[in-house]
Structure formats: structure tokens, C-alpha cells
Length: 196
Ligand SMILES: Cc1cc2nc3c(=O)[nH]c(=O)nc-3n(C[C@H](O)[C@H](O)[C@H](O)COP(=O)(O)OP(=O)(O)OC[C@H]3O[C@@H](n4cnc5c(N)ncnc54)[C@H](O)[C@@H]3O)c2cc1C
Image 1 (tube, rainbow, N blue to C red):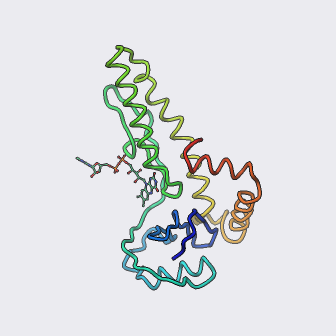
Image 2 (tube, rainbow, N blue to C red):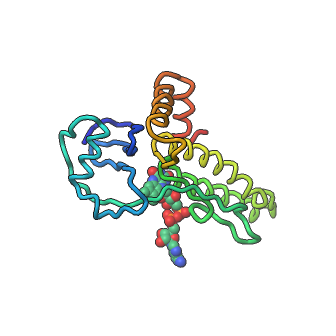
Image 3 (tube, rainbow, N blue to C red):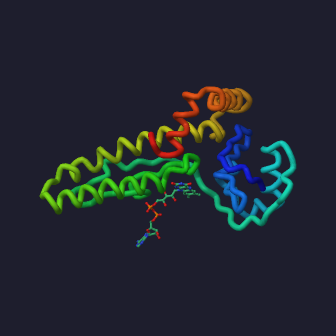
């Protein structure tokens, strides 16, 4: 499809966000109604929708190897500890895949818990275990906020009071700020790379 080695998004009315374009394979998200079925999306329709968002024909159409319907939702089960039960990853929180952070958050939880267990075993110090939920939740809510923002940017949730041309113009203004403002671009980069 393209060799462009970067993420790109488009505030189209049927939102698209290609995820990490690579020469070998790419993953793209197309917005569709919640009650849609994958059978309604044969290859030709997928390519037509992608071309509509790029505004030009896609020169090389590769094979589409899988397709899935993904409901967008954000969930946090607080606290992430109940006695001796510690919740990690998707069991504790779901972020919409728009932000590409679910696995990153799961690995962060695992790192925090592993460090806390080692401290408890080595030094009989439970302070890190006691702080586990609060430590992870601070990180989780930061990325929930990021994912909600990105989702709102590229996806029209169908709210009649906030849709159509007005929502698209707001999204375009935000995209333009990301390209024009070094400060905005740096913050976005920090979220993408997980430094924030
Ligand atoms: C379409 C999509 C795209 C995504 N893209 C990204 C991305 O780009 N970047 C990113 O960071 N995250 C992404 N995520 C999110 C990421 O995949 C999850 O957040 C992450 O896999 C959560 O890890 P986990 O270990 O908590 O859960 P899981 O990966 O779901 O692991 C849970 C495991 O438990 C097993 N299991 C379930 N029930 C039982 C049982 N009763 N007994 C034994 N085993 C059981 C399951 O089979 C599974 O193997 C994406 C998710 C989706 C759906």
C-alpha cells in the first residue's frame, strides 16, 4: 500500500486510522456501525473506503489477511487490588485501540507488580505492593485520557450535538496544530513512545 514509515490519521466522516504503515503489512481501522458484520466488508469495499479517505487510488492492493469488528470503549476497574488479588492488563482496564496502548499498559502493570513482589520477598517490605493500584492507576488514567482524545479526533461517535462538518473542522484544526506546533508534536510523540 505504501512505504511511508509513520502513523497517519484522517478526520474523515467515516474515520480511518492506518496503524503504523510498513512496506510489508499495515493495519487500518475503518469506522462502521456497531451492528455491522464483517461479511458486509469484502475486499473491494475495504479498498474503496481506504481510497476515499486518501482521496486517491491505492496503486498496489495487497491481500487482506484478516478483519475484525472492534467496539471502541474505555473501562477502568478501580481499585486494581482486592486483598491478595491483583488485577493486571485488560482485566483491569480497556483502552480503545485508537491509542495503541493496551499492551503497553499491561506490560507496565506487570513491571510494577514484579518489582513490588521482589521487594516484598527480599526485604519483607510491602510498601510497593500496597501502592500497586495507585501507582498503576495514575499511569492508566493518563493513557485513558490520551486514548479518549485520539478517539474523539479520528472517530465520530454519532453525537448529534457534536458531529458533521463542525466536528471535522475541529479535528482538522487539532491535526494542523500537531503539524505546526513543536510543543504539541512533542507531547504527542511522548504519548506514542510511552515517555509521558
Ligand atoms: C484490534 C486491537 C488492536 C490493538 N492494538 C494494540 C496496539 O497497537 N498496541 C497495544 O499496546 N495494544 C493493542 N491492543 C490491546 C492489547 O492487545 C491488549 O491490551 C493486551 O493484549 C492485554 O494483555 P492481557 O495480557 O491483559 O490480556 P490478553 O492478551 O487478552 O491475555 C489474556 C490471556 O488469558 C487467556 N485466558 C482467558 N481466559 C482464560 C481462562 N479462563 N483460563 C486460562 N487462560 C485464559 C486468553 O486466552 C489470553 O491468552 C489492541 C487490541 C485490539 C483488540
